[in-house]
Length: 277
Image 1 (cartoon, rainbow, N blue to C red):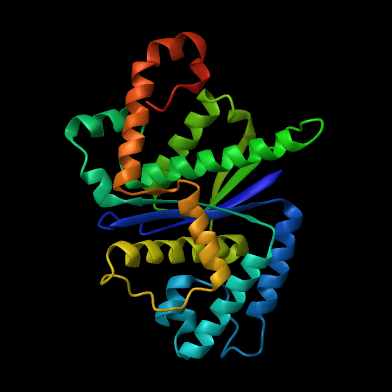
Image 2 (cartoon, rainbow, N blue to C red; image 1 turned 90 degrees about the vertical axis):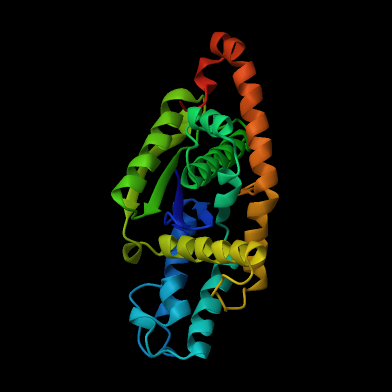
């Protein structure tokens, strides 16, 4: 069983950038990360032992990080970011620029809506899910003989309407795609209970602010230097096609137009691959 832990950043309605990021790994990898993560939280260097690492609180010196110096907050962030880059877990992520979707015409939005892509939140979730499925499928097929590997997804707790939408997109893949057998379940949990969710929060938050600063340079209040190894993880999101800016939204629309043109053929030959409606 492979477990994927994911978290989002910038998921409020007024956000200009949406990100959903996380990691895939087997239980042994997660056990190793959990052990080392807690060792870092336990270090006597900190003013107090935080019950969890939450990126926003650390950046802004809030709640458990209230009273910490900038140097202390940078140190714990650097230690944890370094740990993630040294682990064997696989980073997965997706980013959507809200204005790119807003720039679509009404007919283009209707076309995207037919495949379930009504909002940036839909785009980042569906792509992250497809990327995770693809990686698990490749991993399983690389074995000789091929194996059947399954994927369980755990997300940081979301508002009810967000969780319901994630469930709907997830259930579609289970029902309608030939890779649906890979998916073994989706769950939502509190991050203080699971250190992998704290790692996902760090990647999602940092990815969000890197993209925000890149496109709207005066709007990002994230002033932490990003660990070089962590930058490579973020760059992998873009390299894998996971950033939906204006150019990639146009490519997505082109793909949807082609899919619609081929729909009669697809319905007759491959009904399991029909996109979300």
